[in-house]
Image 1 (cartoon, one colour):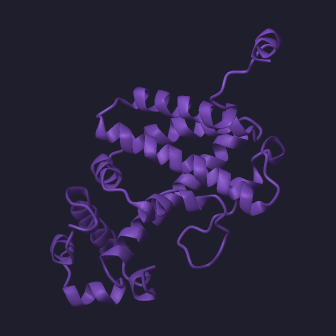
Image 2 (cartoon, helix red, strand yellow):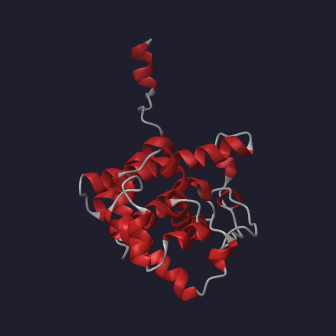
Image 3 (cartoon, one colour):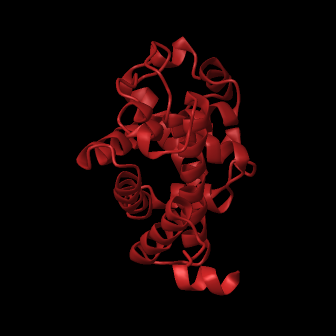
Length: 219
């Protein structure tokens, strides 16, 4: 997280630093990006940068955190549209999320992020929005959690942790699908269709149900 010194800056200077970082992370992956380029883009000194962030990773995940707030609101809204239905809520969210990412004015940033995604980025880019409680350490406290608007009785999960793990697992599938969409240069519609197929596999199973006649033949 940024230091309090960062939040005390005038909004114009904060936005300049964010814009400089977005430019660098749009052109390069997290590993390849350099603080030198970020501070040059932002028009600040390297010493000032370290007054605001611990390192480039700290800044990168702060940017992801800003997007995460919007994802949480979108996810909660999607489930509410279908009164918490697990399958339909995820289907609606997946469609909207994919369009949000692949049709964004920040397309270059998201494309670079997904093409260089690792486990940590995967988790930070969306999976942790599910159970994030409200607190005073974020710019945008989350007032409503996804786990509170989904019909839990539809899911085979006994504990909160098991339920959260299932929600996170499907988010990982969604991130993997978007990653594949970028790699294969799929359209938004093709990527949405691919996720819908995988969601159906996940929620409804991949094995065919045997009819009574076929079951007798098996015996």
